[in-house]
Length: 345
Image 1 (cartoon, one colour):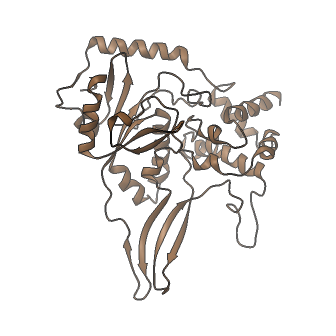
Image 2 (cartoon, rainbow, N blue to C red):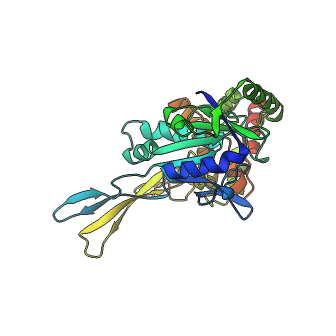
Image 3 (cartoon, rainbow, N blue to C red):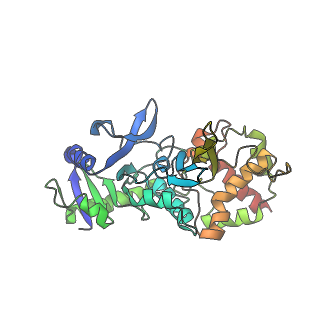
């Protein structure tokens, strides 16, 4: 079946079924914010939430990951993790699913990253479509990620007393097929879905001053724009923007050597282009000395460089970088300022 439906009253039963199939992670409230956490009780799951503090990226691209263990004398290596467990990401926003698609492009490029791909193969994605803005920081419409664009196994859309589920893969179909409380969607269900989508079109509007093609052009011509000096002056170099971004994939490699200097473990850890020493090389040369240059680089890594290389924008519109910025720097305001400068030029 392509579309299924489940009553809200039966959602807890289905979640219990999913828990038996694999490790289940879902958004949960943490004080006044939200986080992805393992599910113990279905009642703890938040289906209406602003984007979580960290994206679900932490489960398929861990912040601190063992790559392998090694012994120097006699030299040998052994993978730190022999096998990854099956897991389900539940109620993932479409902007975060877009982030997963971006990471796929990066880590599937030759040479492929085996750890990422092995984890991804074990992952099932159950998305949930937003029918209204999560808050004022999101720019998902501008990026085209306010609607589902693939990359998921199941997608839930909330109606009055039920959810319609778009079945998008064989893996997803196995999670809904044969369950008595999930039935194939009928004509009335599809009409209700169409009405919800029509209403949604009146809610979501382009957050940028111009279409996305003009945004790309503004970055093409805006390398020396004054806006970068302004952003650099305000930036406090905390690195929050890159820490919470669903498409930042920079990492460093570190060796933890035991006291006998004969054995150790090699790790992969997240790194950030906003850190002071990120662009420093041997001899002390720094290719991006100032905060303005580092911030400019971050924006170009979302709106210019990946478009040239992968034909894909690496900003998903989730709004996390703005939401978490200690200096109050807004991505929407920065892009619109660049567009304004481009227009004046």
